[in-house]
Length: 117
Image (cartoon, rainbow, N blue to C red; front, side):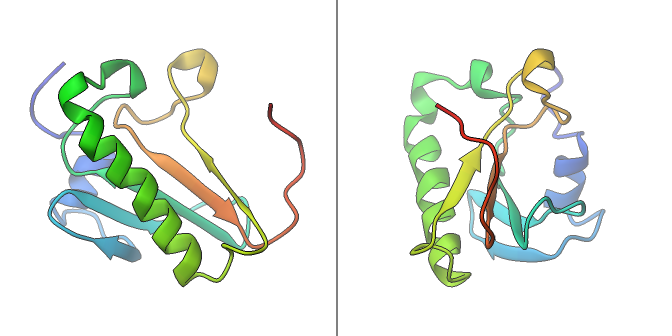
C-alpha cells in the first residue's frame, strides 16, 4: 500500500477536493457525504492513512477511540443524539468498502430502516 494518502479522502484532507466540513482537528476530519442516505450523513475519517479496519494497528487504538468520540460530538451538534443514529464502517469488498481509507458513516435524523445485530 502506498504511503501517500492518494485516495479521494486524501485529496479532501489535502484540500485538493472541496468538502462540506463538519469537524476538523489535527487528527480527524468529518464532512457531509455527497450522496446522503439520511438527513444527517457525515463521514468521519482519520487524517492518518489507514486503509480499513483490518489495517488498524494496536498503536491506532487512541485514534480509533477518538473517531468514535467525534461521531458522538457531531451527533450532539446535529441534534440527533437523543433520537438515535447509526455509526457504520465498511470493511473489504464483501463489506462494500468503496474507498481504501478508514471512514465511519454517521447516519441519522430520521427513522432508519433495517436492523443490524
